[in-house]
Length: 423
Image 1: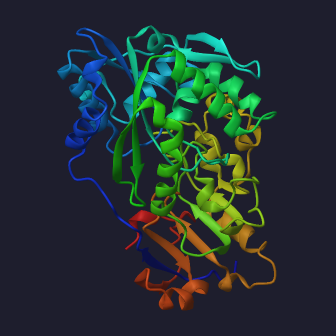
Image 2: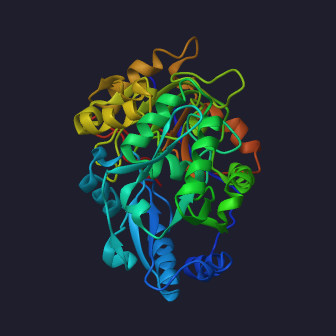
């Protein structure tokens, strides 16, 4: 390539509500549920822990366990993550450990199994699965982050209700529900199955977590079981206001340094890159509109789960080498999204990759290409942009320019450094 676009660094300003004392907030919120009225001394209480990178999750789980012990209960953690971790009990325990969730850090035992109990059948004929160990406990406290789902749309998306279905349903439940969504709406399945779980499975309440655009805990709220379905839509609207986004609504190329299950259930947040409805393009009413997406690496915490790789047209060859094919396919097939595991065109170096991509942006000259380069779809406060965005960036009060336009910093090996490492 004779000429590459120059890039500059900018900082975005997002709303930043956040909690300073996570543990005290958890205790205060749980006290509102008045669990002492229903918990007997020695009662075993299951706490759900998912496979997402939830900020302060260890502190949240530890504080919840402490509150329950104060009431005389015996809390324990169950992995609530569908098929993740290769759909094995040990794999799911290992996923928790990558987030620092251990028995010593949380102050209670972790009990992991993939067995489920079918508690009933819905009106659609769906078996309602629940983690066997959670079902055998004296009560379940659902802990989960509320945010927009990466594929499905409705008044309730990712949160406490989905945790009861896909999380506590384990691999068997996740497989059934994702298959059912091919014939019924996401909202119908979510509502009907959740109603059965709430009515039959000793759900004591929920602890809903909402984060801001800086990957910080912004809100923690205890929700009574009877209010799950009415309160979650309100929390979802709040998280939409606080979530991060790319600074511009149209791009020729978006480069992501990494994807992973700790970043998003789809490896990358499709709400951020405009691919929630279609794998390789934004829907007419969706922004941003990104012509080509490239993935440069996997996070360490994802342990080879490259779910979402199929949403990109291009990637570095190392991504495919680091991909755990079995784990990735199991996750994507369980979620009825096989294309998310399909392989993009891969190139050994970033320079080779960009040479191909810049030749496929239409009539624009490579030097004028609109490129946004981010660490991942979770950390977007600072990103690198090509000079084509310079004029608009200078006019925007929500953007601060941190570095003047400069050449793409290819190393001798033809690769770019980590975006976060650039000054």
